[in-house]
Image (cartoon, rainbow, N blue to C red; front, side, top):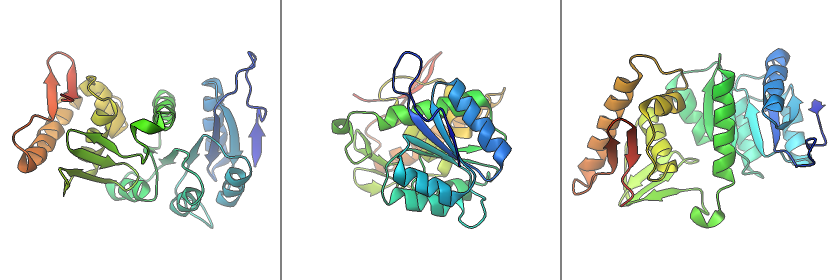
Length: 244
C-alpha cells in the first residue's frame, strides 16, 4: 500500500477530500492517484483488496475507486465488505462493460461505474458528482432514496417505484432517471446525460440515443400514471424532471 500526501491538507491549510484507489494493476492505480492528486484530492493507493479493506477500517476515505477483477477477493466482494461499515461513495473502474456487470456493481453498493479505457475528465467529473451527492444535507434524503412526484429511486438497492408500484427499467433507463432526479428540476443537456449514463464522449448519435431512452422511460412511467408528465423536454437545452 502506498500513501500519497498522507497529510491530506493543501498549501492553504484546507483539508482535502481523501480518496482510496484499489487496483492490482499498479500502473493504472498510480495513474488514477496522480489524476486525483491533480484534481486536489489526497490519495491512498492499494494494490490488493485486503490492503484496501484494512485502509478503510483504519483511516476511512471519503470515496473509493476500485477495480473488479482482482486476485483473492474481487471488487464485488470488497465493495460488500466495505459496505458493512462505511457509506463512502464507491466507483467501480473496470474493463468489464456488460450491463449485467454494472447491475451487479450497483447491487453490492456501488454509486457509479466507469469502464476502461476511461477519460480523465470523465472520471474526475464522476468523482466530484459522487462526493456532492454524499455531502447533501441528511434531511434531504436521510436514507439515500431519491423522491419526486411519487417516484422513489434507491441507487444502492437499484430499485425504483412510482406510487409504490415497481418500475421495471433497464440499467440505462435507471441511470438516466437517476441523473434527472439528482438534478432536481434543473435541465440537463442530452450530451451531459449521454456522458453520464453511457460513460462516453457524446457523438453525432448521442442526442438520438438519449431521446429514445427518454421516450421509453416516459412510456413506462405513463403505464402507471398517465395523468402527469414526469420528464419534460426543455427545447434547445435538454430534459428535466417536472418537479411541480
